[in-house]
Image: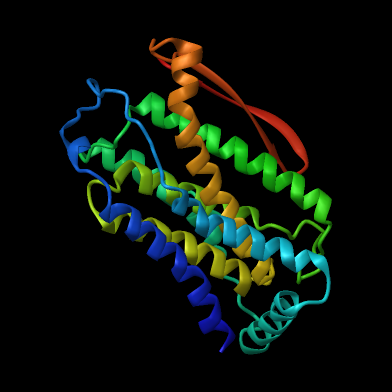
Length: 258
């Protein structure tokens, strides 16, 4: 019963992804990697409904004893009763798979929407945004993990990165085929479910993490063309430094055109 409910929570993401794909124009297929024009990203307000609902779902669980928090406890209890020795750690690697697929597909001739530098900058910017927001919330919420390992349970960092990279794959390849989007989100969903089975997170942690991951990439794709015009005046971007926050430590990412 609870596992079925988890599935239906995540299936909303698939619907959101497919709906966006079917309304996109296909002219970007004619653009080549070295001659791409600036691509304007103009999402509808409805594109933010799913991540907004997911984040709200998670935040409500922090307000005390309510139906969402009780669902956390009952779902965890059922999973641990049915699978007490489950220990499949692929979630540590699956969260990066959609991003790897973007570059892999491009290398074998299935061209992404943006140039390698532009998309890499957007990927790093999304990563910085999600790690800072999720890392900060982990410290503020101080929620104990179901396995008692530490008090950094909310939101799920693994899930946020998985959905961030899934949305990245969606943005770069949604005009090619809906199956790229579905595949990326399937991997992200699998990552979130594995976090539950591995007793590392509550359901609300995972749902909120998915919301933060999707939102970070959407906001990056929305802001990047404007920032690029204002800061670089249409010139090629040679280097970018962006912050990140992970495991309680602030760091920086550097990307440079060679």
